[in-house]
Amino acid sequence: MSASPSAVALAPPHLFEQVGAVARRSVMRTVRQRGLLVFPLLFPLILFAINGSALGAATKIRGFPPVSYRDFALAVPFIQGALFVAVSTGTDLARDIESGFFDRLALTPLRGSALLAGQLGGSVVVACVQSVVYLAVGVASGVGIASGFGGALVLLVLSILIAFGFAGLGALLALRFGTGEAVQGFFPLLFVTVFLSSSSLPRNLIQISWFHEVATYNPVSYLIEGIRSLIITGWDAQALALGFGFALLLCVLTLGFAGTAMKNRLVRT
Amino acid sequence: MNSSSPAIEIEQLVREFRKGPRAVDGIDLAVSPGEIYGFLGPNGAGKSTTVLMLTTLLPPTSGRARVGGYDILRQGSQVRASIGAALQEAALDAILTGREHLMLQATLQGMPKADRTRRAQELLERVGLTEAADRRVGGYSGGMKRRLDLALALVHGPRILFLDEPTTGLDLQSRSALWEEVARLAKEEGMTVFLTTQYLEEADALADRVGIIDHGKIVAEGTPTQLKEEIGSPTVEVVPADAGAGDALAQRLASFGQLARNGRGAVTVQLPGGESQLAEVVRVLDQAHLKVASLQLHQPSLDDVFLAKTGRKLEGAGEDQDERQP
Image 1 (cartoon, helix red, strand yellow):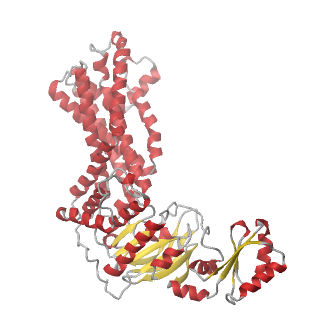
Image 2 (cartoon, rainbow over the protein chains, first blue to last red):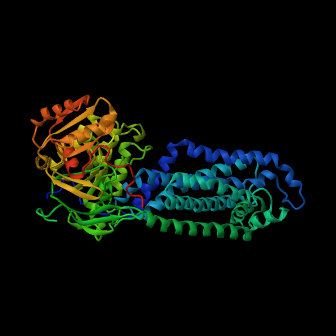
Image 3 (spheres, rainbow over the protein chains, first blue to last red):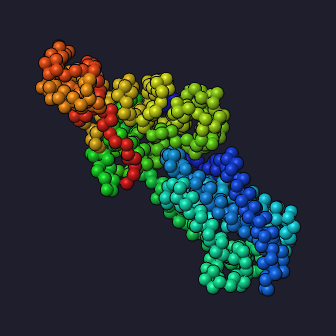
């Protein structure tokens, strides 16, 4: 049989080129669907504005850190934004699975790891934009960063790492269940974990014992406290170690399981 | 693969799903290089499952298959490099433009950067999407999506093309445009095409050879002409004026030959004696005082072949199901 005249002998593309192509598509999709950018940006900022002014009286509780409630609350939008990144990453991937686009990609020499990394790479770009906006809005509203400029940079790194870990969770849910509904179904559950943490009050001031217990065992508390320490305390080695430690653990676990789920989903002989 | 060996060769291919019957039940077939092979059958017959196995996206339960000379189980990546596939329903990203799809596909296929733009433009022109190239796919018509789907399958210049129900849901004009392009690919570029369809006229118009699949088994195979000649006799379809008279109608017509019941009491019966038996049919109906709304004589078609081999009409014979669900 003669080959097609236009046939080209092709070598499999380099891994970085594959990741770049998938990430570029992921970013392009997000940028073109403004709702995916605007709402994850606006919603945490609206909650921050409401809590910052409505819960100001909490600062009068004995033992509350000597800062405004707005300073205290600025850490929360970074986590809420990371949850939105998880949902959009998972929904995008699930949509590809449902529409058959995933099969189209599976028919190319694309490696599963490149597909996952590319998808998450696009999410990280979105997370970067979100984090910079949250920080800029916080500073513009009068929040001071106790750890200074260097601390602000570390804060951005930590928040992006957290978003990366949650994006991995979104990808894992999409690959495991294969539907956008399943991914979105987990969103309220994820949101509850933020409320059952030290997002509204320092842990030592939570009086209800079960809430205190849950907040202590909830890793989200340590993610928030890591970010918060840079804003209100300065350089707190323990809070940063716990924050980065749990963020890295989240990344390792979600990416590890997502990698396995990708292998199972991307069945090719 | 040398020029005399089949482009696609299947031996006793089986796919079993948990909690279900065998979707593909031991099929054998061979497709020659440059041939258009039509895989015809109703929904749920096993067509898409076969395509998924041949394109390496679904492992078979047992059996062997070689595509482009490569074993689908042991040489999956070589198989994928040799084939292009447009699977059921155009799998496109509504947010991207047609050109962006082609550029992404060219990148992932490993095409050198310098060639990607040229190849994308070449394919856009070939499938008539030049003007719509920079519009988002979400605004494309069904026909445009299918043409883009075809272009994407051709990016890396495959030798074998799998098309899974490529014209389902398309209007007549889009359908014939796609047929023309598929025929051209086989004739001018020597491409082997494995086409699944539930449209008889599609198989009839395009395929050099047709395999009819039902309940996972190939029940007939040959050129459309051979298959129709095998059946040989025409059929007559009788629609009673009263839909409730279907049973009485079937009873009267059973003596002529194999019959099939259709909707609204209609009965189709083979006339082994040829068209001359039509007068006799009319006489029988008249004697039984059965009022007829319409009576149509059909020359043998692939539908008749399906009827003869399965006892059912192809239209409405299957049930909608996702053949990939375990």
